[in-house]
Image (spheres, rainbow, N blue to C red):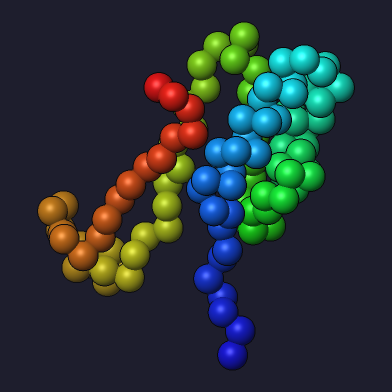
Length: 100
């Protein structure tokens, strides 16, 4: 039976690739354009691949601050009406790749 769990890139590999792409985009307008128009392809060129259902967007920091807050799918407890606000069975986390 095939594993249906999406395979996300290793966080350390992502951070390394992202840092390389950002520093490259600062120096190369063509790379910056590619990074903005097709970030998945730019990351894949560095060996970092996301599942096909993950949408990646890159915004120029000069155009203001963009905060993306993903709304995850509900866990089974929520769908069954058994999720309390302080339910220890669910862990919600967020991560950021910047140095903020």
